[in-house]
Length: 321
Image (cartoon, rainbow, N blue to C red; front, side, top):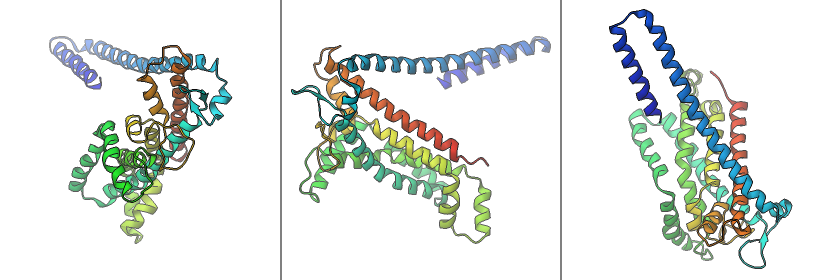
């Protein structure tokens, strides 16, 4: 879309230039004004489409979820500890799905955040330019691997490897799914954190070196604190990405909604449940069908809170140089 807009702007300017070669310069302000007006309305149309899409998604979620909450009390849904919307006796407590989602996300964060931050420090402060230009694209290849491939990698490689160490580990478990998800979101953490560190002015580093600090001290005591808002925002965005991950946890973590924080057990996340029921035979408009919108609404609320937290952190701790 951006390329198309740039091409259109270039086309207008070329036509403007050709016209100006054979006409009076007094016409130039009219062409400039026309070009600015067209570009302004094009950008406004793109922004409007984005806003309308968001509103339509929210309307669909709320409309379908209200049909569910007409039959199931909100309090029972948010505080219930059993989730069996298909099997009898039916229960609609979403806490097992929430706990499964948080468990896998916590494991992924434990893996991705320190490794991603250390990678970003290396690329920003230690790696030569030639090495950085090679390593960064290779690292970002991880972000281009389909999540379904990560899921089968966790199921067929990581889980058997962990079973050689943990004999009680079952095939479908939260541990392997969380570990592989952590590897998956490392590029997001490292790339965004490195961008924040590179934006720190060179003068701060040179001032620290002039006072006798070594590279390790400059990295951890000058650069990281100066880029803290960007680093925390990267952490929050990566965690939000982990919360919304679908295919990896659907394949590797299992489909057993269980209120547990034991990573060696099979669990089910909110996204995995949505996939499971969407592929089933629940009639459209039924209570079972509407559960996916209620769960989706909870998932939306969680990711929205994470994004709002990231926005607040960036505004609160942002350093302007």
